Image 1 (tube, rainbow, N blue to C red):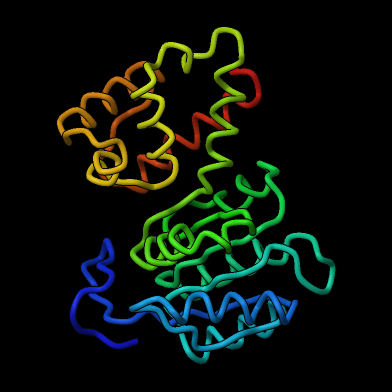
Image 2: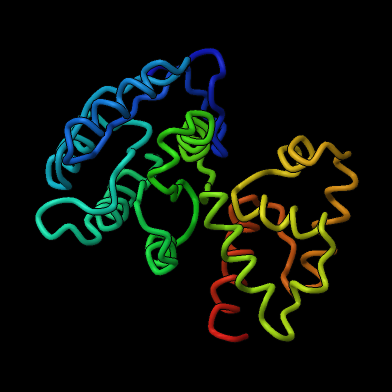
Length: 240
């Protein structure tokens, strides 16, 4: 890791000139495609590849990359090795961001990944590997201590909750619902304003309305805001 001009500024004030990324994928073609895609991006360097969780953990301990990009299913059981690896890495190297790639939209994977907090985690569908902008944003966001959820998954969760009788989501305006979706994806107020092409003051009003209508406490820390939104989405999935 080299320090210098700002490419990515973390919540802890650390300025990283170039992000070192470790890829974890047991299929060579997919691993090579990921490496080439990220290596082509300014400020990102893929410095290694691992085929399973044990190799990845050993590599992280020795080289301490800024970001780990891992498949969710790997040998030996092809179940949740990627999630277990993400938690293990966070315990030993909390400053290392983790992007988990999955072929599945099952919410249980998301809740399992974020069971101990949202800071420095991203969950993306593997289809996002073809969306360079989204993948790169996730890598840079988790390196900075932020969090990202795949927009398609967030949208599906919101649609499912909105359709429930008596859901407070039905009280949200279109602008407020969009702000909620972008908050769940990890966007700051500035990022939401840019995405929605509105003033920051408008975003602040929409977010205040969202927290009031959903009964959530507004908090200044971005990760806590995301955590609050996800807590609502999780609780409302059981009929709240």
